[in-house]
Length: 172
Image (cartoon, rainbow, N blue to C red; front, side):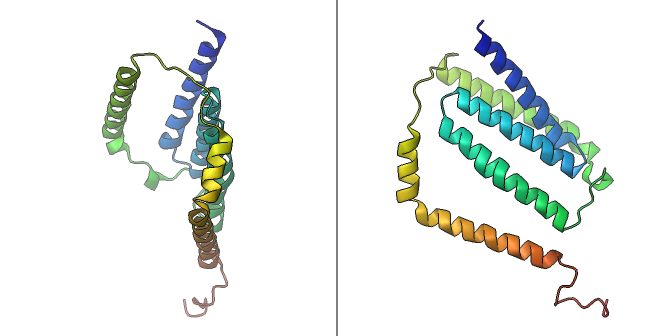
């Protein structure tokens, strides 16, 4: 067993523990921080598999944008930050656990059966080629998505403002 194998197993163990923390905690902020750790470990795994573009996209888009937007949404809407009994659903945890492990087992079986237990890592896809495709053919959809995200952010700020023109506090 090589050192990279041992490092990969530790990464996978950390990934499983942080992903479990995301779905088991009742605190929204703790779930967001655990999701950051989960996505970071996922990006490192993609870097080890020579998929630099996917790893860096995870860092820039998901960690750099989505998680920050999620945390801003929590802060703007004044969501409860502590333990919340309404978010804890004890009666469905066993069913969710069984379904999750079933899906994990099924995906693991399919992956191992497809590759016969051997994963051959090649050079990967050139980031330059991916960049040319994304920035030539798919520029317009990227711009549309950026405007939709901007509109969602402005809408969230507008809804969360105390001095909202649509709701007069004297009438409430």
